[in-house]
Image (cartoon, rainbow, N blue to C red):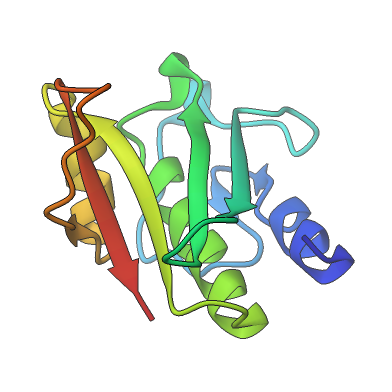
Length: 133
C-alpha cells in the first residue's frame, strides 16, 4: 500500500470517542469506552491477488473484542474501501468470512459486500464475499 493509505488509516485513530477523519452524528460510546488516540484497537491486511481474477484480498480485518459493536469496524472498513477505490488498481475486494460470524457478516454487508458465489472446498464453513467499485 502507498504512504497515503497508511496516513489515512492513522487518521482513523479515535479521539474522544469520535474519529477525526470521519464524521459521526452520534457518540461511539460512553466516557468509559472512549479510545486514546495512540491505542491500536484493530488491524487490517490487504494484499493483491496474483492469480486471476486480479483484485484486492482483505486477508485480515480484526477489531479488539472490547471495541466491537461500537461502529469502529464499519468505519475502518469504509475508509479502507475508499482508499482502495482511490488507488484503483483493481475493481473489487474479496474477503472470506466464517458463515456463523453474524456480526462480521453484518459489517461487510453494510459496507457493500455480497456473496461472490465462490465456494472454497478447503474452507467449507466460510463464505466468500466481494465488494465491487
